[in-house]
Amino acid sequence: MRVVAGALLDWAGLDRAGLVLIAQRPPGKVLAGRWEFPGGKLVVGETAEQALRRELHEELGIQVLACEWMLDITNAPDEKSLTLHCFVVTDYVGEPQSLDGQALKWVPIDELHAQDILEADQPFIEALQRRFGRAR
Image (tube, rainbow, N blue to C red; front, side, top):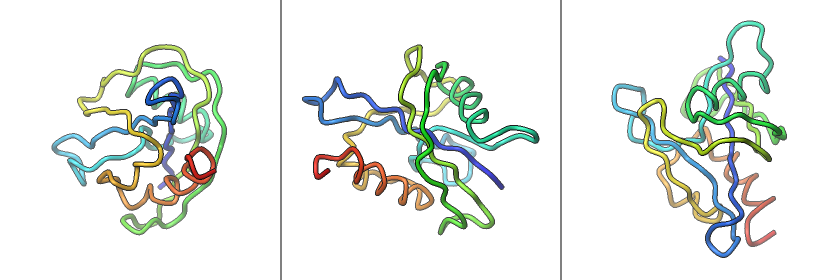
């Protein structure tokens, strides 16, 4: 299975320390209640970037104008035969809103490890913190 995840960054909040949007998996889904980066599965014929643009439009109501691939995670600890394509969304239009019934929250990049985020997303968190965290 191939999946995309996008980190939307906000540098205006929290003394410009950097916030990232995470979404809570809604009731009825596998691992409900856990947090993750918005995104979803690729459909046949889509590139990872096309899937990211489609998924974030469907889930959050935003139009991605620019994004940057950051890393691929293969065979994540809590999934079988999964490739997670991780992107940083560098520009978008619209205000992110919950269109899939999931809770959303902005979290400081340096505090992502304190959230109950899926194990599959942990390497993405580490990459984001290395690149955008206060310790950079």
